[in-house]
Amino acid sequence: MEQLFTGFLSTSVPELIMILVGLVLIWLAVKKEYEPMLLLPIGFGAILVNLPLSIAFEHEGVPGFLKVLFDAGINTELFPILIFIAVGAMCDFRPMFKKPVMMFFGAAAQLGIFLTVIAAIALGKAFPSLGFDLPTAATIGIIGAADGPTSIYVATKFAQKLLGPISVAAYSYMSLVPLIQPPVIRALTSKKERTIKMKVADADIPKALCISFPIVVTIVAGFVAPMSVPLIGSLMFGNLIRECGVLEKLSVAAQNELSNLVTLLLGITIGASMRAEAFLQWQTLVILALGLVAFVFDTAGGVLFAKFLNLFRSEDNKINPMVGAAGISAFPMSARVVQKMATAEDGNTFVIMEAVSANVSGQLGSVMAGGIVLAVVPVLMGWV
Image (spheres, rainbow, N blue to C red):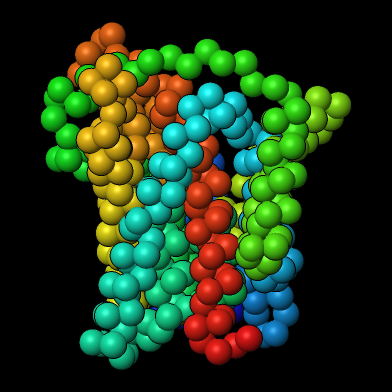
C-alpha cells in the first residue's frame, strides 16, 4: 500500500513548480505556436524529469532514458553538431554574395553578446553568490545571438550546471522574436527610415563560389580559431552538401529528417536539464534577464550599424535600418519579422532579400562569436 503513495509522498513544491513551468511551455507551443518544435519537447522533458523519483532521468544509480540521451547527445556535444549540419544545409548564402555589405550585419548584431558578458562579470563581482565568473558570463552572453545550438555547445564547455536555464533562455527568446524585435526596431528608427526601398541586386552567383565558400571558411577558421572548427565546420559541411549539386538526397534529408529528429531529441533532453534543484535558483532569473538584455542589444547593434552606414551612402542607396535587426541568428524568423514590419509601414517596401542576407550572415556570425569565446576564454583563464 505504501508503494502506491510513494509518488505523492516524495514530491516537493519545487518539483510541482517545474511541472507547471513545463505545462506553460507546452501551452506556449500549442496555443501561441511559439517555436512548437522546440518548446513542446522542452516542456514535456521538464515534466518528465520532475515527476516523483525522477525515474525517467536516474533512480538509485540506474540511468533512465533521458540521462542516456543527455550523456550521449549533450555531454558529447553530438546534438548541437548535428543541428548545425542541418542548419548549414538550410542556409543559402547567395543573397549575401549579391550584397556583400550585408555580411557585416552578422558581426554588428553580435554587439549584445559582449556587452552582456561585461554586465554578467560586473554582477558576479557585485554578488559573488551568483558565481558568474568569466566562463559563465561568456556563456550567458551567447544567449543574445538567438542561436540555441551555439549556446548549448558553449554551455557544455564552460557552464554545464547552468545548461538548463541557458538553453531555455536561448530557445525561448528565439521563439519570441516577433514580440521582442519590433519594439526595439521602432524605438531606434523613424517611419521614413522604415520605408526606405533598397535596390535589388540581380547579379549571377557562380556555382564555384557557392562550393568554395564553405571550404574556405572552414580552413580559415581552422587556422585563426581552431576551437571554432566543430561549430563552423559542421555548419559549413551542411552548406557544402547543399551547394555541391551531387548530394541532393542528403541535402534534403539534412534539412528535413535530420533536422526534425535531432530537434525532437535535443528539445526533450534540454527539458531533462530543468530539474527543480538546479533550475529554481536566483541565478536562473538573472540569466533570463541578462539573456533578454543580450537579445535586445544584438537587435539594436544591427539597426544602429545600418544607420551609421547610411551616413556615408547617397540618398538613392540607403539601407533600410530594419534589415540590420535581421543580423541575429534566428533564421529565418527575424527576416520574416523585418519584412512584415516593412510592408506594414508601406505595402510597396520589400526588403526580404536583404533581410535574409543579413539573417544568414547572422547565423555565421553567431557561430564565429561562439568560436571566439571558446578560443579566448581558456587563454584569459590560463587554462592553456
